[in-house]
Amino acid sequence: MDPVRTCVGCRTRASRSTLLRVVVIDSVLVADERAVMPGRGAWVHETPECVDAAMRRRAFVRALRVSGPLDTQTIEKRLNGYGNKVNGSK
Image 1: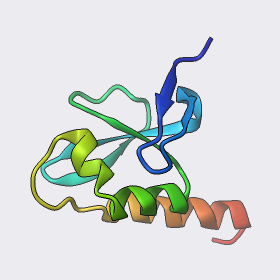
Image 2 (image 1 turned 90 degrees about the vertical axis):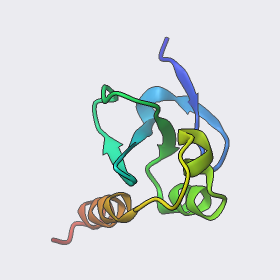
Image 3 (image 1 turned 180 degrees about the horizontal axis):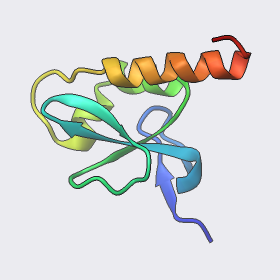
């Protein structure tokens, strides 16, 4: 049985394998592909809707227990790249 985590964007529970773990490194939100990076992590569905909801609600800041703004460009670039791969364009 796969462990269950809660998405910080939509607040639904899902299996760990369907969610993306993110961590903060020097105020930059970074995707943790293998879910092994040290430190506190937050889990989110890898969809623009969930990531946008988490940013809008400041859920990453709360879940990761950091103060101040986070640089979310790396996560946004990852989502944009993922969308292009799904659509088949380069």
